[in-house]
Length: 421
Image (cartoon, rainbow, N blue to C red; front, side, top):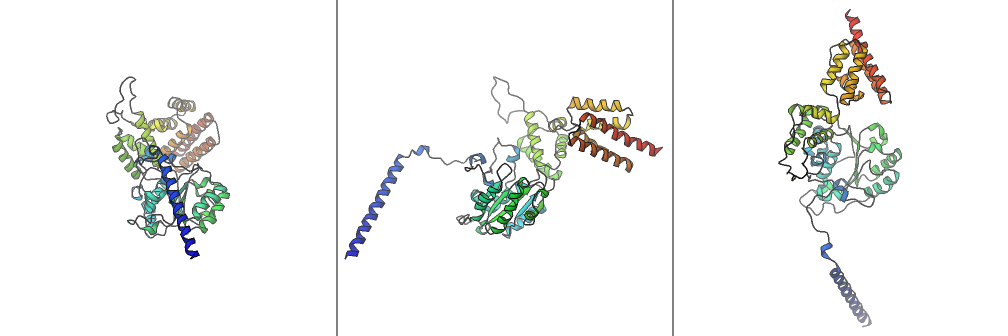
C-alpha cells in the first residue's frame, strides 16, 4: 500500500514537471519574433557564407547552379564526371571504382588547369549527392592551415568519426556507396614534411571510415610513404580538341563576338590549360563591351553590341609576342650580318610592344625548331637559347642577354655558311 502511494506521487510530480516545461516552451515561443527567423530560399549559397569558426570550407559549399556574376571558370565547372573534358581513361577507371564500391585513396597530379579539382568535386557529387556533401566531404587547400596541428586535430577528428545516417533516409539511392567520408587535400605538395608524415598513419588507421584524395602539381614534393598509399593518376595537359569543345560552348552561351582565327589562337596559346583559356576569353569579352555613356540608361546585357575580338586582342591580353613580330625578328637575325641592326630591331619591338625577352625566347625557339637546318646548327641554337633562359631566370640583365640571343643565332648561321662552303 505504501509502494502504491509513492508511485502515485511520482506520477503526479512527473506530470507537473512536464506541464511546467510545456508552459515555459510556449511562453518562449510567444516571445520569438518569427519575422527574424531565417526564411527558406532557393538562392545559391557560396563558400564564403558557409564557414565554420576556423574559416574552413568543404567542397559541398561550391555552387552547383552558376550565376551570371561568377567567373566563367566556376560557372562552367563540370557538375558530373560525364561533363569533365578529356582524360576519358582516368574517368572510366574512377567510375569503375565507384560502381564496385571499392574507391581507394587517390592521388591526382599534373599541371594546373587540367581538371584535377573538377574531377574530385564531380566524384564527390556522384557518391554523396548535393544533400550529404556538407557532412561527408572535407576540403583543405593551400590557403588553409595544414600544419601538424591541423592533421592531428581537424583531419583526425573528421576521419575517425563515422556518419551513421548519411544518405539512409533517401531510399531512391544506393546507400552502400556513401558509407565512408572523403577528405580532399588540394595542392598537397605545399604541405610540410612533418604534416605528411603524420598523415600517412591516419590514412592507414581510418581507411574503413575515410578515403583521401590528394591533389598536387609535383609528386617529387610529396613523401614516398604517402605516394605508396595512393592510386596515382597523372592529368596531362588537355588536348586542343577538348579545350575547343568547351570554348565553343562558352562562346555560344555567352554570345561572345570573336573571330575564327582568334579562337584558334586562344586554344593554341592556352597550352592545355582550360582555366587559362576561359580566363583570357572572359577578359577579352569584357574589354569588347562598350562603356556606358554617363547620364544614359544602362542597356540590358542582351542588347549590348560587343566589339569583335580579333587575333591581336588575344595576344595583347595574354601579353604574348605576335607571330608576325617573331617572324620579323627571326628573319632579321638570319639575314642581317650587322649585330647592331639586329639589336635595334629587337629592342624596338620590346619597347613598342612591351614584350619580355623570356617570351621572345620561347616563341623564337618554337619557330627556329621548325626550320630545316643541319643538326649541329639546331643543337647550337637550342643549347644557346636554353642557357640564356637560365640566366634570365637567375636575374640576369635583359640588355646583356639580348646581345647573347643575337650572338647565339648568328653563330648558328655562321656554322651553316661554313658547312655550305
